[in-house]
Picture 1: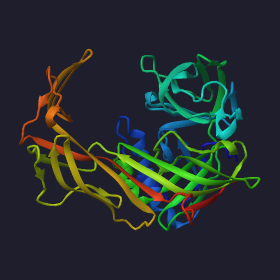
Picture 2 (picture 1 turned 60 degrees about the vertical axis):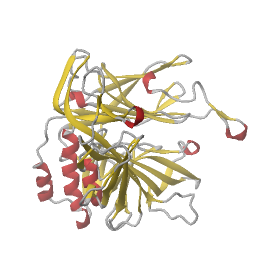
Picture 3 (picture 1 turned 90 degrees about the vertical axis):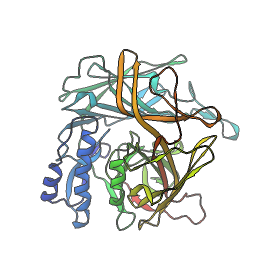
Picture 4 (picture 1 turned 180 degrees about the vertical axis):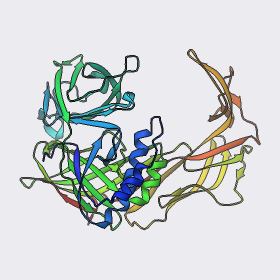
Length: 456
């Protein structure tokens, strides 16, 4: 078995009845097809995780997450198995997801590292070329088909990750088949290197390491390379949040132990409940690069969700400046995953609408600390305008509300000037963002790890 690949043998017994049940989830055509299909599979698997241990192939696919290879039939996954030099940059790992039913959804992802050249006094770092890597300076193609940047994680000298999808104004990519060649180039005014070709092969199996955080939550880690680790935090209580949210981000901080006993750190994004939450993964700190991580202790997670009204909305009449509106009954803009967000009151002042909320966690996991909830409002009604050559007409569009002069509230309809809202007009409010922490910083006195995982 190869440890630096993206398939893993799940250590969870999954009954055939649950697999069949998951397969009944009919994927809908559109951007969320794979995501929702994967969620159905994961929900079934997690429900059976307490029944015992058995080997089963699972797959990590950029844009999808961790899901059973037996269920995920819509994509092929390819990966490289060694570091590739691109000038002073190291291509740490390259992973490609081919969506067989919708090639527009293909995803190419790679992680890069540029080593520290030398260190001067007071911890100042000097690096070769620029002090950071820009995503717009990378170009990539798969089997000769050009791919465009679809997001990047910039960084100071050290780590960066970059994702690409097919360029829209070209013929759809042909099926990849067995041969997948990725060409990657990087160019800056003061740093130009020759493009490199990376041969990807179908992903092979590898073993993941799993440990329990609580009796209901587990942490699973899979080494993608010597310096990158794919991780998943499973807590079934939070699955409704992940499925409802437009965007989910879970940032983890670990203490690490290398093969020679050196302590260090690692940080990056985890999957949540088996669903892809970002294109990143866990990255070791600069000083431990290529040192061989053998143990990882999870200390703290920062988790955030973004919504566009999926959790819940509430509509109320606009007040005059200086007035406060109090709902007659309890209004919950969020009530799932153990979290609630109750709208207590709305006050209108010269800065706009100010919300008083009660944001609480009522679940059983004592590691959770709610930290932040932000509300947003809109006015629903018709819009009619031209966007370039496209005529946008919608009789019931959500129109963002902005604060104008002297506390006036306005929204865009397509007219020459923004429409000024009048008292009594309906305003709809929803929970836009929520955040919570899980565990505590390892810098905190007497902090204990949430979980410890031994890596091969």
